[in-house]
Length: 511
Image 1 (cartoon, rainbow, N blue to C red):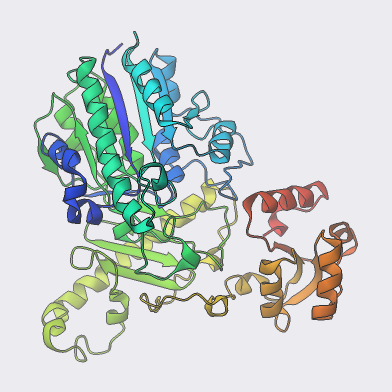
Image 2: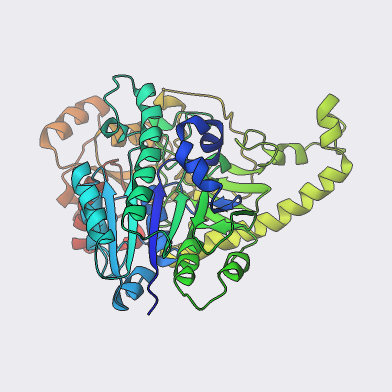
């Protein structure tokens, strides 16, 4: 068995743009980059931190069956992760996070999120987090140590700084991230482990504040534009000469590379060249999840290092991310202009000439075919119907990206309309979300029943809407095609979902 060790370092919320433009916040990381193999074309497989963790652990997408972000799996995961495999070979395998994730960590461990025999240790204090690290470094076994420090997350940077201003805490969170990694390398040196330890550092996603809309106040887990998924990734290993690689890599490649780096008998330089892909596929929600109209769009993208194509319920978009790294200019709008570049003037006419149009047209066809195939595959992995009505592959997304709205009336409410044509719908939930949909659908959708468990609320809204709202048990007396659960809270959604299953209602009828 190899005696090499592996450390994975999670770079929370650090995209390439912020990493490059705020170099003063990352003095140690930039110095470390110059001593490492840096991959300039690494793109994250998701815009959700925890989705990325699982993608890395299993070197693929295995959790597409999750219906909510409470990580509840409908079917058991029989496949081992590479962490399970290394643990079975005698490695001490430890995954730590700080600050604590609470309920998320509990649900993840119950569902084999990182491995069937590997749990995430949720550290509720920085001293405890550091003590765990030192206990692994000072142990007698080869180890895999995965460190998920979330101090640079916008929700957790308060643990990094006492600054009263959220803007100031944003900077402090990144400074603290850099300091923590410097502390780690100091400990590796103290325990004489630098020579026989491979350290892999990767980013999960960036934030979007707020170049593509307000998204109800969310900056995380929104659409996989390049400024979110293009993140740093480098390997520090004394056997490797510092260099920059341009391989196209995804989060699902990290485990493959890391495991092969532990083998002392292989040509490690060959490993770094052999792992590459034509496209990276990325998403912001599991396949089995439904679109949240009052939140962010469900979206999928593919990227080849120069172009990114994305689809959501607004339509299709395509960007040249080298010239347009923040994805503001949807090239598909240009392709719809007649007579090539006749209507473009000045500088644009020099870039988007007739030859460019031909190149873009071919690239569109190639990427569209690949994107459709990838989306189909994750729906199959999620064991859910294809639901292409969630996504508009056949229209161009013309959304005004710089529009910021705080008014729910501006949010599209017709996301589900294609699914509901000629269907009898039961609306389950009469809170703010349920009232929103009732008001939008009352005249156009055949709502055959409206349910809620709150007696007082049912009586109050019956007077308001002149519509009799029934208790949940009344569903057994209804004839319907679909039940739409109109709640935003994940735990409440799960409870209602289970209630409906207990009543014998098919999963295919529950949205």
